[in-house]
Image 1 (cartoon, rainbow, N blue to C red):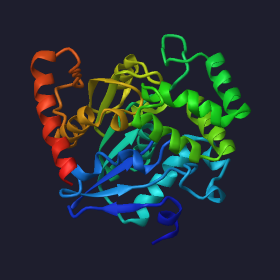
Image 2 (image 1 turned 180 degrees about the vertical axis):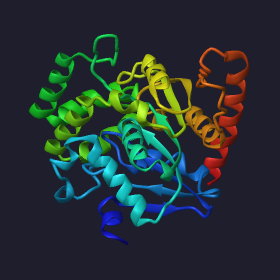
Image 3 (image 1 turned 90 degrees about the vertical axis):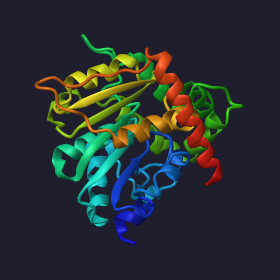
Length: 305
């Protein structure tokens, strides 16, 4: 195992010929994909890794200067792909990792067949003619709460982010990975993410992008998915799921897994100069029935595995 692989706890699972890379968001680690991985290993080489700063990584490897921008994380991703000698992959990025993948794809578009962006935002702060969901005062209060009592903040933030109460298994799991982060590093990472503004680079992203969004997400309003769709430089498609929370792959795997599998297989058809825009949230009569059938079958497969 190389130095980069060791630092990021890289795991490669599966027996397929194609590579798919799964990247987690803030406060989690690669375990957030545990419900999804069993459906991929027969057809793909599945690459899992931890972003620097996650509780599972060595704090000594965290570079407060390098990781004060999303570009630093993008360079980490490219280093992982280089060390594994991967020359083509499907990249599935949750939350901030979707933007990390987007930045990496600008530098090396040849490495990415497509980006699947789950609960992603180019900017969390509201701005003129842009609704990101937060005012600066909201973020200041969040940062202050983290600094004053990190554990108490985790207990309050986890249910809000996941969309449940502390009795929820998904909330407990997210709380666990939040607790695992060193508080000072968690504060640095949260500032880097919530104060970031990637809007200016979206038009440089030419790799096909599949934007997957929960209908209710306290961190990313639904309209952000349309903003991404309208401003990305290449072909894009949107699917809004009838789920609640910022970590749907953890809280609603029965809904999310069929959606992700569909977009992994789906190729966006170019239509003259227009990008495709699809949202399935209003097609309740047909798509909900299909999705529920697929989900039941897939979840049975997961139980058997």
